[in-house]
Image (cartoon, rainbow, N blue to C red; front, side, top):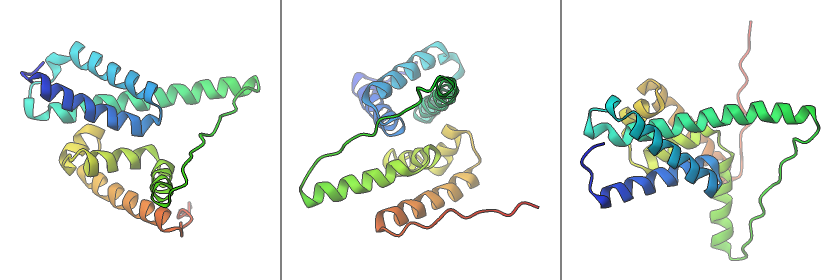
Length: 173
């Protein structure tokens, strides 16, 4: 692909892994997702011509692979539920220092956001992508990025301040 030096590749892979880890919430799955992203990018390197858009393109691939995996998981969960084996385990978090507990509560609130909201917050707030780059990465209009990001920030604020609002329901006619 593009003429990136080893340090630039390391940094890019760390960013991809961090994003994948927040999406999957599991280190092994995150590593698999990053590996799949790199494999797909290498196989389709002829499709990506703009060196400046490489980062957004890789995030796009990673996010699409994540969504495809989620669709497969839902399908498999349905199949398993037919056989009565669709139970999930909850993770146990430890720690007794107040700051750790507060940080974990914030992370749990973040984890309760939808995958779309987490992806937007991570891409824009953590990875530093512009709204336009995030729109390209997620393949949605820039206006949708801005409105979803606003709602994601509001939802996270509500969850971390301890007074979550029930979701607004739309009336269908």
